[in-house]
Length: 332
Image 1 (tube, rainbow, N blue to C red):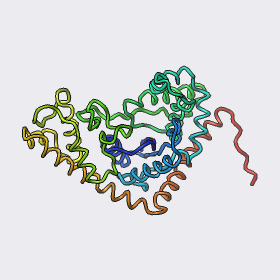
Image 2: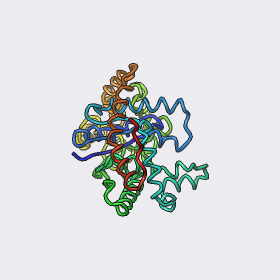
Image 3: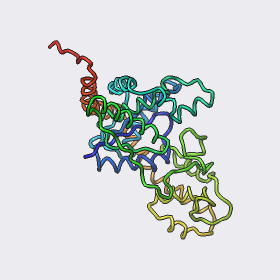
Image 4: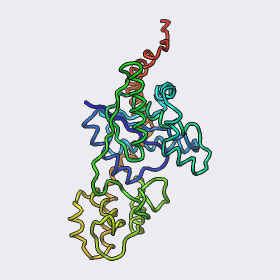
């Protein structure tokens, strides 16, 4: 089986957009490939974090992984900092990465343009991402547009090292979903922006939002002029976004939705949409509560870290040997 790696930062609440755009895809992938899904807490601390909040969000994200349908008996689910090989390989890879490459990264340049105090950790973020991927002899990485540049750097680092030392790392390929209508879930308050956990509260639906909050947010979602419900990303971006959410939650085609609501106005459409979203998230929320029982998610993460570490050690030892580092001696 091919091997897939992906990681999500515990930097805020997961949204409906994260679930429809990524997590449901992860659930499918776990049956098609050997999957490693990581809570990348080390990436999160490249910017200031409240320690208690980071701790809570790390557990929350791990529980939402499983509650969304990832099966720890099939996929390996773990916390990045629980496998020290990520940090060690990041340092080793940094010695084969050029400052010019890192300073050209779009995300780093954007932070610098804003005049923020940028940490060296943010500069080295793509090297840690390369370590995450290369540790597991990864064949494919699900990536969005915002991470394609970082994956390309991972490929360049792997190819550079392989050229100097012979075969060390598998060169990963991007796993990009085919472009289609509704490939991205947009903000409820601004259909030109992606739905994101960093947005204002009414712009996104969090996976743990209670039903009454979901209904309220959808009622307040921006719409376009007119009363007609039909898909047109250019002229009706707000309604088109809501239709995509409806389609993904209900399983109905966009054409079917347009025929049902026609020019009857947005009220009934929004009411029905809210119910579909509530029903989609209900089993996730119920499973999340089960995983919140003491010791449940901790046991899953402990098992996942052990499995990940056993794979990562093989790759790390292979690279250490290639570059001439002395292995640790066993005195037993």
